[in-house]
Length: 183
Image (cartoon, rainbow, N blue to C red):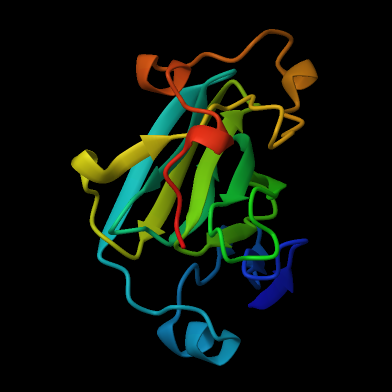
């Protein structure tokens, strides 16, 4: 597995080695020894799986007090995946990175604790799986405003031909300047 740092070095793209032939393919999506060698966390407490339609935008979510690191991968389809740095002491506070993830090259994204996370579905449907480093704590969950100009995410809405489909919770996301964040 190869690790590629993004513009925010703690957010890492992971490129697995895929073994394929006429029968199909095989790859390791997680290996504790390899993650240790790459300096990435090796303890995950929860696996999550979602399926969404084209245009669904989930996020930007994070948890206070029990922040989650997330290892994101796409099982089917294509998404634009985003991480926003919410660590006030970080030189990249308020900045974001975005990566295309899909079921073709099987790249994954490691998002450490202290970041908000969200994604936009670009394919007809997408199934996303992710490992979390802390348990889901609904009372601690917060949402940033997906289109906050202070963050400036350039969501590829032109690829879906319409505005995003948002949950009620995500429609009520708060601007970065009003958000509870991490020290």
